[in-house]
Length: 196
Image (cartoon, rainbow, N blue to C red; front, top):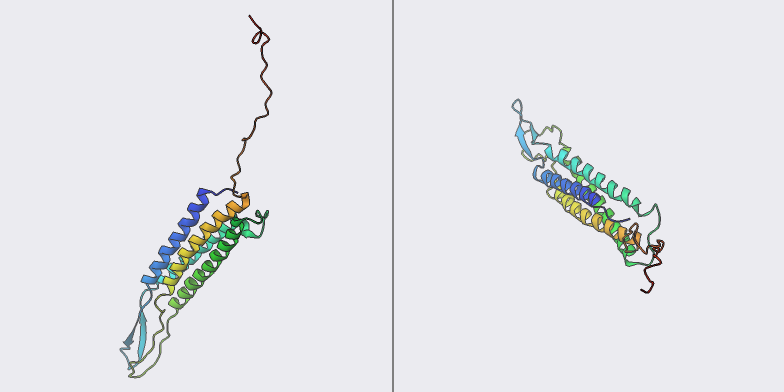
């Protein structure tokens, strides 16, 4: 299997868009402030925008689609015909397959957990005259870790695809209609070699 430029473009685009969404989710994390109820002495949490939850879930989905594409094309290293054994390309393919999956799973965990935690809002709590109300918010850096692991997954996926294509062909590109021609020899006219 030779490398396909269209597969590389699709996988790279999906990873980079997921990275942008993850960075956007980090910047738009939900914030909370403690506010006093106007009718009594109770306090409650007022939350800002939930945009980062949507950004985080969008990044989660795009990263999942990208991983499905790359593993669908390579048949997840487990199915299909075997790779050329004993070559360094096969070892690299297995190594980058593991790197790709570990970084993918880490990024997905960060994005999903960050989205779920960002969507969680502390319910109305009754603290009479107290200022020590704890409003649940997402810790800074969860979506940033997901973004960093998304880039690591991109590098691992592209290198896995490259190593898999080399190991699949033994390092050689498959070409069609090349080689020695076995055509019939041309007929020579009897007068060509006659002496004059």
